[in-house]
Image 1: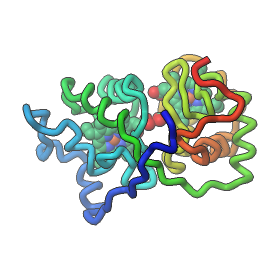
Image 2: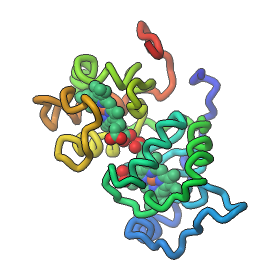
Image 3: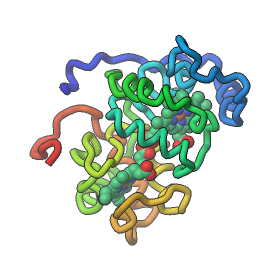
Length: 212
Ligand code: HEC
Ligand code: HEC
């Protein structure tokens, strides 16, 4: 994958705004088409994740370019109750739609818009990342070992919230990640989130190889 071949696309407009979003967040399941034959599997996702996988609000995650198996893990975690459910729809994705949805978003090559990050926090986050997180979130978050999601170029408010969610118990630590978090303060974790958010999603990293 070469970042330079990726096409830049502006995030889609969100004229419908917060009212529609709120209605979906509180779960108007009746309005949701359930994977009828011929329906577009991502039809119910576009409102928040776009067709190109770019999050429509600052705290919505970008899904573009995330490997298929990792997207499947995430959808399974919502369905199996292993991850807290903020959007009821995440639990209601028809089983037959999981693979085509994962394939669709994995293939999207839109460029993620950069979040405004603070240079001081990015620098502090980088050294903590190298010591604590680099074993699984490889290549500054652009690659993955042990099923870790890609975090490079992810939306900053989303990253801050999710990074802290493990520490405050909202999300359960996966295997060995609790050790990586030991004695890190909220500020340390926020700094690592700034470091991940400041990365280009796809550029090659000097001096580090993909998939060791
Ligand atoms: C109402 C807005 C909304 C809709 C509709 C929506 N999502 Fe989400 N999605 C979110 C938000 C907000 C989060 C992050 C919060 C959370 O973890 O619940 C998220 C998180 C995710 C994640 C986890 C990303 C990560 O990096 O861990 C996946 C995967 C995902 N959504 C897939 C989908 C799919 C597939 C659909 C359509 C079937 C969909 N979402 C519909 C708002 C939405
Ligand atoms: C031993 C491997 C490992 C290490 C070390 C590790 N992680 Fe993770 N990380 C994972 C796995 C696996 C997941 C997915 C688990 C889940 O679904 O909750 C994950 C998920 C995450 C997520 C959620 C991403 C998303 O899109 O929802 C964040 C944020 C994160 N890790 C941050 C960190 C930070 C910060 C460190 C270092 C302090 C770290 N991780 C160290 C394996 C690791």
